Length: 379
Image (tube, rainbow, N blue to C red):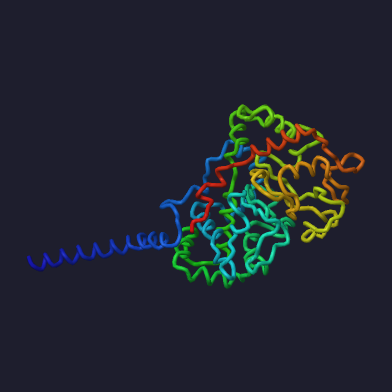
């Protein structure tokens, strides 16, 4: 009887031991993460946001540049969020991706040129990242020198002005933290840290920056037709929408396509008559592409301070004024911006029409994405 009792307690001890061994890592991982980053117990729904039905429109769907080998997951984008805000990604721990792409300004920068890790300045203005997933040709940077978002997100990290790291140094630095191996395991099934998975995670987070909660989105959801008056718009906003969508002379919607307001290709909007920046020519080597640049979505355009590839235009009214009376004769000007004789088109809007167009552009502001915790710093 005594031996049987001993055997019982031995079995009970072993059950408790193996049970504790199974549970402890999960508890320890949660505690470790809590020490370093502020994350919800269950990740935010990056993979399945509650998008309006018009996102299922075939013309919107074909714009999506998400590759088959990097579909957004909740944990993948969560890891990307942490990396996006982590200054460990710069050589001297002073600059993060978010330093130049600030949430409260539509993930763009208020400065004309962004500050690098040693105090130098970038060559071009930091563009907005909102709706980056819907640039159909999938190329990135103003000059589209990056063939994909996965390629692009690693390039500022390695840039001598921006962040100054090598990928080997980055991987070693991230590997030597206590919490990153846990997040990589959650995101990719293994704690092994690689540059490829850093790229994938950052890309997933950037692609999750989808704007769908603006006044425009709410109005479209009620009528399901962008060309009729929106019930939640005032008369001035509806006038501005009509100018944007249907005015043949203005033709804004001819370039800023679909309800995500993203262009299909790089274009030259003739800021000047001379192309001082070669634009996408750097990767196409086609002289017809000199001075052409990628353009970000117009969602949250009113929340930015500076505009154009060189950040030279300050304020939304100045942008409208450029298209109204400021377009210059340029050898590679976009066809939408010249008449049948090849001369620059001037919209010549009245002051009330300018105000209406501005009022409409303000309706594209998605205030929620600018404050949503799922897109904010977890540190």
